[in-house]
Length: 192
Image 1 (spheres, rainbow, N blue to C red):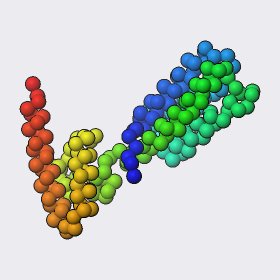
Image 2: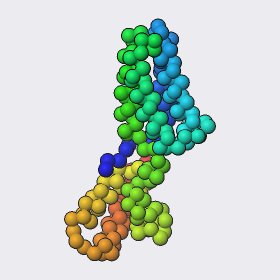
Image 3: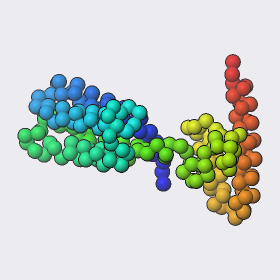
Image 4: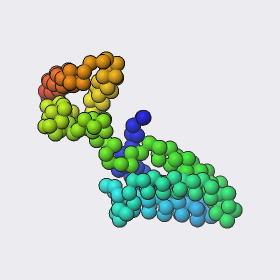
């Protein structure tokens, strides 16, 4: 399964940006009731989410994802009603926002556990934990693309070779120690 690249904080920030953009656009569009309703909906979604930018923090991840889909679908279908149809610019803007928001929903990690990395998701434990299989010496900075690539490589290797898990874990631990030494040497070399 492909990992979703957007953290929930970015999702909330985008909700605030979309709400502000719809309000700004409504100032230049006749019959802008739908644009203002969309702005209010996005603002409420961002403000009531249990996330870093939330104000009230009522909605959990699953409820927020469902409400995101409902708001996008409502915005997409609302111009079909003549009473809610904005001007031409507003109509195009509402449809683009609705389609764009459906895409944002598919790229967002709604649960904070998904952001902790492949080791925690795979049940290997937290790399900073001294009792974890990799130990504290193998922990790499979160978000390191190199660490993620090495994890993917190690996972593919583990599936291809029928080594016993303890032998494979020991080899992976040694490779992690070597990589960490190389990374420290590279960082020391690149410092001014």
